[in-house]
Image 1: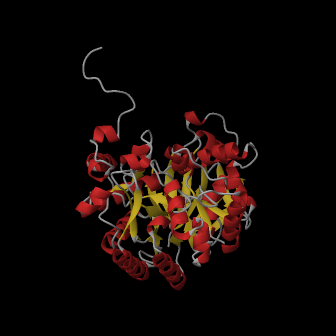
Image 2: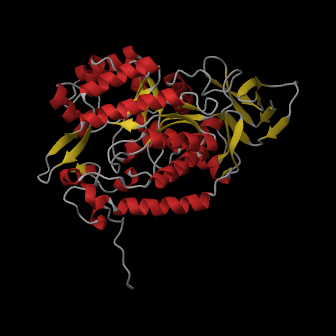
Length: 491
């Protein structure tokens, strides 16, 4: 096996308790494993990489990683979501939902999205896509192809097709409801279990399995119970979006008479395997201090992980209350992107600012706190002490962040400067499992301009399909008006 030494202006090492900065440090890895982090390595080396004026750090762990051509960006200036197709029109369901993409287009969007993740320093990803434009759920077959695509690109993935027993619908009179198809939900879970069994450890361990039931309000009690049982049996992560929207908490109150976390606690769903984006609406439909505290107690006792997605939440005017509060309670909080761009650096910066605003305290959290959430906390959520750190015995998942850009201004501290002034576009090298998969903003084997052109064409067709799914079926230009009126004549 090849032994490689990489050095740079700074290295983010791990001392057994947390990250430490090593000025002029070095990392040595052999095959897929780190063998030395520190100074003065005098053993044999096959390859040397001088990263220069750069920060060498662990790869980011994205627990809710965008694997889609993001449709949430269409709602940036077009709230509320149910008016622009974020909830299916009941008439669309009556006609029969359909797939908006072909199988080849599904593959292309994943290739595009996985490439974006690598370009932004994400080495471990748990993909998320929208079911809004699907016939119902994701399939075993498409995820078999996703595993092959990810393995070819070299990204570390936790995969499992999303499934559900229900879909939120809005009726012509504005009334909301759930359209149920329990048989499809059971079949989806069975397919997901089969996928996890078949693909655990695929591609020399780059691919592992997870269960991914869709939003909690779209799952029956039976589906949640059977999912929890399967996750324990398979000992794999299970991710469920919850505590996210007013419609969700109202639905859970009407069906169960309690908060989403209360339901999950009652059903035995909460344990160390549970990953829960987004944690915004704790305490139920009409939260009280006591009901919020009950949710916090359940989360802390269960060792479940909240997955904060700062950028997409802030874009919609919502935010977890709060990252700092959860950490004070001993709740593990990891990071997800869940929107475009999948820029973890921007998410870290957004998270810090929003937490300080929510807390009313500029010392409520730090750059170190959020960097740790995107690395060590993600590794804890996955029960992977070999990820999220640079230490002997860890996987060789390494990023190089260029500190030489004029736009970064004066160096304060490498982590603080990265988060305040940088972005994902400043990563110049990404190594996963000891293999360089991105260098100088290029990914081996991918024609990025061609892929971008194809993604734009697919996205334009997706946007054009929205009227059939949207409440009262307005034309696309009414669903998604531009920032300013378009004029095609002289003023």
